[in-house]
Length: 446
Ligand SMILES: Cc1ncc(COP(=O)(O)O)c(C=O)c1O
Image 1 (cartoon, protein in one colour):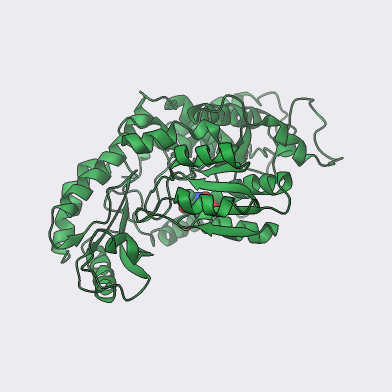
Image 2 (spheres, helix red, strand yellow):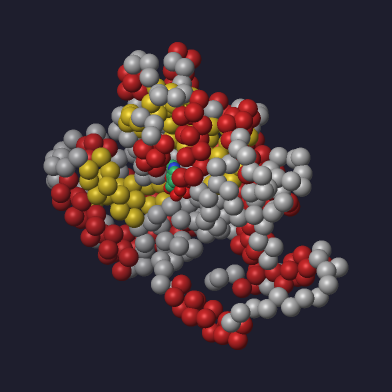
């Protein structure tokens, strides 16, 4: 189950790597505690068993996707070197691998020019983009939709940039009229559009937002931390595809390889369309950047030390599964969406279920029918627990009751937010498990 056979390829790769350093004189590296290592490793395996089975298709809850075995192996291999991608001095090979891998992500997103790098995740990547927006539009507000990730409001707090929330429609997408209302005040420096919201996978209407940019001079930052890779999927609805086709118009963009990009955690990416923003990062570092005139990634990132192993893993994964629209990786994303549509269809056809809207990407939200939001919330939590007892792991989300009341006016709204069920079907294998997931849901009083 845990790909023992695939990992058997690792010793040969270690030997290959070792050959590059064969000319070094013998030395004794000394491993403190070597005698007890296997005992502690065994203990670690026992401790790690206390987890939900994120790697299995019956884990259909939060946004968690297993890294590709090659990513795990390339990461492990690179750990032997433990490169630091701050400067070429600390991570020569992996800095170059990072630049190549990031360029491929930029091209997937339609950026004709770019400056970008990896970051520890979506939060740090978004922080850099909003920091740049704040420097370029000092004193102006940053706005994001009510369904944008909470990180944007928090980041603007850290950066002391004024923030405002833009209302959403009843499908969780930024409402362009509400945005225009804010823009008329003339103090908005940056609009954050979410392409794939965390809760429901909603995609903000980029065509309308870009039309507004022609009339109001704001910077557009796209948070595609979760959704970005769907740019490659062939089975998006036309309206969703229209947004993805405009990603290249963003001034900055975030995509997280550690979400849909098959990477271990610690791998986000920020891209800027205009390489000149690199000058904003200028700093004096008298103790680094001395071996090469080539750009050191630390010169264009806020974080200093960063794991070169993350770049090695990403580079290897993209080499194996190129980011092309007709490739195996793209087919995996299309399978995730088919899984979500398949589960949605079963839920929609069941008269005992509320399904507020069709998934735009691969997140399905639904709730058991009930007369009031209180009753629906209670029953959603019960089903969540019952399903877990039956081996199916879902997630609970607290969403605006308006999402449901818009389609089901008979629902009595007693609270603004209602607990409902949420499944992120982000493993391509989910497609083959929809029937089984459905059976367990039925067994769990759905
Ligand atoms: C749309 C979006 N933006 C930002 C983030 C934050 O990313 P991270 O958890 O990698 O810091 C998430 C996380 O789920 C997300 O879905």
